[in-house]
Amino acid sequence: MITEVTAGWASGNARASAGTPDPSDRRGVLLNLTAAGQTKLDDYIELGSARERALLSGLSAEDKRQLNRLLDRLLASLHSDLGG
Picture: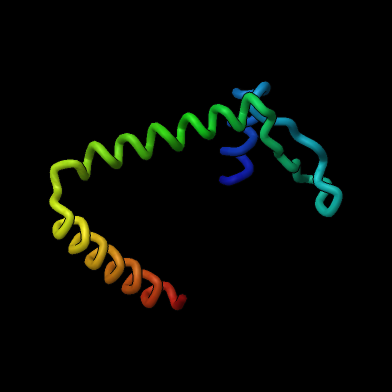
């Protein structure tokens, strides 16, 4: 699955990444971001950050602290369930 996803991304974004054969596994390809790919990734991360800020803008500081506490508890529960 991961191979299909990365191969699809790499072939669809040829200028965003460059592939080289994996020396430890001839079936694999090591992907590296090009400068254009790094710019796309940075833009995508900023878009996600802007969406997060907009989503949380209606919460008070205390609401945000409570949300963080609840998310921490959820994450701890998930780690425990997964044996982590």
